[in-house]
Image (cartoon, rainbow, N blue to C red; front, side):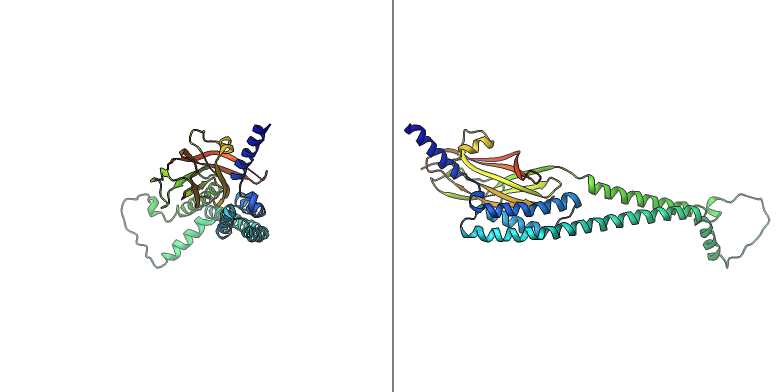
Length: 313
């Protein structure tokens, strides 16, 4: 019975080592998720982005990923303050959206009426303007063979049609641009990359001393056509384990990092790689998760990044 008991203790220690920040800053993370729900709804429903709100929320979530103790209480207060601003963000998003849509509809109607008026009354008005502009011209009659007037010599017959065509093209273009903005955007996809201590790709540490620390950075690019709350699960594990959520159960150490990124933007956050105490070949594994507002949970995106390194000494 002692062997199973020892194994259970070791498993408990391992799970505690990779416990997410929720164990330390649970209220702050939960409050950040609630605040994020407003930002997500504002963008998803009304294409509204408050970069200041999203930036402050991202800073909160990153700090909550690393914080503990009394710092978590302060972060929880900030999360509640951001959550209280959520209804105002959503109301402004709704107002701006319908103001924009009203302007587009009014512009399309005005252009359509202009096209109709050009066809219906434009010829008469154009002729009057043409006659008024040529009121001081003299008409000289001279003998000679009779010839038909060309269209360019017959007055501004086609001007109203040109104007109507221009109005129609503008109305169709404005409608198409609005629909494209609402319903057609590139993506969706996300990018996760590991950067070195100089915020560059490559030149990663390959040899580390036992229990030494190295600061690296994770970069996430959001092209998901929505504001996103990402979770990066970070783990240090044996190099032979495959990349995937199940492998994190065997991590030597690890934690969860949370980031809020608007659509079309990217963000960078530091991560600390702590080398294990025992020499051997290991890897740093990063798994990217998406937050689902409707379910209130994260799901694995299938995207990962990993760095192999040796512990020597």
